[in-house]
Image 1 (cartoon, helix red, strand yellow):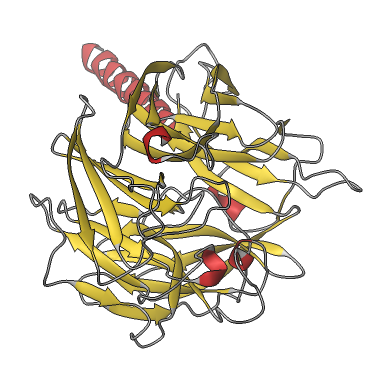
Image 2: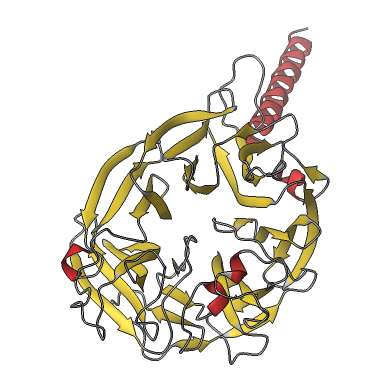
Length: 433
C-alpha cells in the first residue's frame, strides 16, 4: 500500500513539474499571462506615415503590431488603430524606448514604452528649441540628439552657433542634461575663399570615451549649401565632458552622411568605425567633386585609415551611395542612386519613387552586391533598418505601392512582405517591458 501511495506521489510531482515547465515555456514566448504574472512582454512598434487626406499634410502614427509575422504578410494599416501624432516626425529608439520628435509642426519629443500590462503608452515628453535633426543610441540607456539650425541671424564668422546635445534617458524618456559645445573649432574667417559655415551633424558614434561626430559644412544662410565639398570631416569630442579633442579630415571623398538620417558613421563588432559619403547632387550636395565612398577609422585609432578607401562608384554594381546601415557580420545594406542625373535635381533623391536600388555592402572585402527581389524604389526614411535573427526588415516605396522587404544579407536576396497602406514606415522597433 505504501508502495502504491509512493508511486502516486511520484506521478503527482512529475505532473506538477510538467505544468511548471509548460508555464515557463509560455513565459519565455513573451505573451502576457492571466493570473497576475508579471513576465516580460515584447512587441514590435512602427512609425507609420499615413496617406494625406485632401490637401492636408501626411500624418504620422505610432503603431504596435501583433507579431513579427505582421511584417512579412498581409497588410499594415492604421485604420481604427494606432496613435496619431502631430506633423512630420523622426522615429528612433534606445533600449526599450521609442522616441518620436516633431520636425516643422511640433517642438516636442515623445517617449513610448510598454507598461506592466504590455500596452504601448506615452512614458514622457520634452520640448526643444529648434529642430532635433540627428540621433544616436549611445547604449541601451542613453539617446543623444542634436539640436540643429540651418541659418543664423548674423552670418559673421564670430556668430556661428555651438551645437546643443540632448542627453536623454531611455528609462525615463526625459532629458538628463543639455551640453552646448562647438563641433568645429575653425569656421572660416569670413572671406570669400574661406566663408563662415555651420557644422551640420550627420552621425555620432561613442567609442572608448570619445564621441565621433560626422558633419557637413553649410553656409549659414539657410540654403543648405555645402562648402568644402572635397573633404570628409569628423570631430572627436571627449564624452561625457564634451571637450573638442581634434578634427580629422580626408580628401579622398566628400562630406559624410545625408541630411536627416542618423547613420553617417557606424561602429562594427570589432570596434572599427565606417563612414559613407554620397557625393550626389540629388542627395542635397551642391557640388560633387569627389567619388562616393566609404572610409574607416580602425579600433583604437583617431585618424582615418590611410590604407582603406572603398570607392563605391568604381565598384561592380556600385554608384553613388545615398544611405548605408550596418547590419552585422561585416555587412551593410545600402541604397544606391540609380541615376544622379535623372532630372531629380538637388534633393531629388529624398522625394522621387524610382531612384534607389538595394545592395549588400561587404565592408571588409569591399564588394557591392545587388539585392535580388527588391524593386527600384524611393522615399526618405529616418531610422536605421530593423534587424532580427540575421534578417533585415526595410520599407520600400514604388510609384504605386509600399511593401516591407525581408533581406538576407548573406545571400543578397529579398522577399516581399506585408503591404503598407500608407506612404511607408519610418522605423521598425522591438520593445520589451
